[in-house]
Amino acid sequence: MSEVEEAENIQLIRSNSNNSNKPVDEEHQKLLETEYQKLSRKQKRQPETWKMNVNKVLCQSGKKRQDVKGNIRRGRNLKTLKNCESNCRLKEKTGIEDNERNIREKHVQGKTAAKLNRDLDKQNEDEQIAIVCFDLENVFALPPSNISCFFYSRKLNTYNLIAHCSLQKQAHCCIWSEGTQGRKGSDIASVLIRKLDHVIDDFPHIKTIIFWSDSCVPQNKNSIMSLALMKFFEQHPTMEEIVQKFGEPGHSSIQEVDDLHSQIEKKLSNLEIFSPLGLLHLLSTVNQRKPFKVFHMRENKDFRMYKEATQTMNFKKMSYASLKQLKYCSTTPTKVYYKLYHNDETYTEVPIVY
Ligand SMILES: [Zn+2]
Image 1: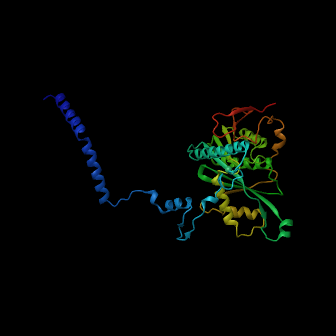
Image 2: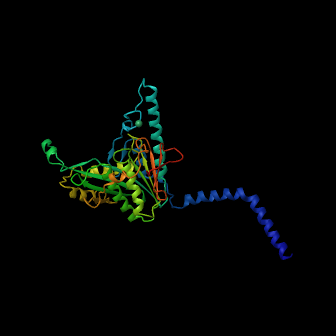
Image 3: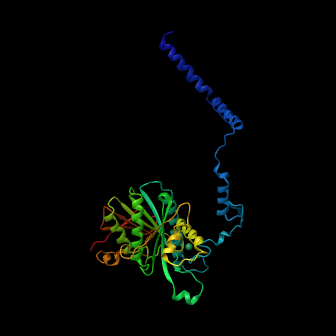
């Protein structure tokens, strides 16, 4: 037999054996695997049976559970959570008129769209996109006391703006007192820009930043904030895009910030704090595992007066109260883009130069 013939024969035998024995092979393989599993002591990962995950499911469905320390935690009533049927300002009532019903329908749709959009952003794995959620925390009146006359005459209000950055899940706190500045649009914008500077320092490769905040028009959704964010491109030329997204009023969909709030509240509930500096120290010890980055806003350095600068541009065409998303691009510094609903496909373009 020549070499070529031999090679052909071998190929034929192989193809035959492959065709006829395929199912048997698979079955055999499966049998072997099960036998192996019975014999070997090697365990497979089954995350759904882990104590931590079982507890998480029980907790989220409001059932009774045992925590890590072995204490029994009571179940909670999930109906008290905020949804549009129980304690929303637009809850379903009998005998509402058509226009009221329309407003309610839009509200529910807006809420769902915001939630969907938020969930999409949470799945983001692109290293060049940072998702920053922020909110102004309840004002601290220092020092804490329960005596009313003392309360009203000897208090220093201290503000804390909390932000959570999706990259490395880092929390930032910015502290300033009412002696330094208030909490108007210009102040909030200055604080946010200071925080962004730090985010860029930590992650210089970022090209896009997506903000999530509540829809408070005087603080987060106004021409001052737009101007501050557009000026931000001038200082950081590597940045390409900033998007601001707003939740539906009454339904904040920013669990990250809410979680930080409750951590702080828990830590500070039994402590005496006498000054903003004391608060600064305490905040940096709130989370031991991943300490918050805490900044003190400096009076003359960090706060900028953006309000006068907004007069040089034409923001009058923007209807800030009704929009849900805002976009700024470094390539078009004279334009602002907005969406009225989260599920709109394209942005509407507005030139802001006179
Ligand atoms: Zn609602």
